[in-house]
Length: 136
Image (cartoon, rainbow, N blue to C red; front, side, top):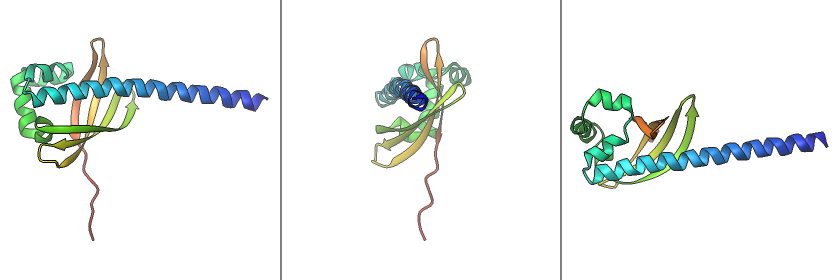
């Protein structure tokens, strides 16, 4: 009986954790989707609003931020769709892996560093993930 109760409690705890991560994942995906749509529409002010305070401090303006994305992340600047993969939590930071299709149809793998603020989720950085080496 004791094992059954322990198993039931463990199952409930795991269910609660999975539901919490699913909820966070939906909120995080919504922020990333909004920013991607802003870049597509060339709404730099809107895209900049989704950046963390640290990112905003580094670039200083929506124009500077947009120029960096256009030059350094052309697949984000001219994106044609995103698919959300693994979401992981590391301390106060959540990492959302995104498979992003650029305007030419080429796929790119990115990790979005997300932080929760009193104003909601903000993007605190994006990094390209190297694909696996394929070949002989």
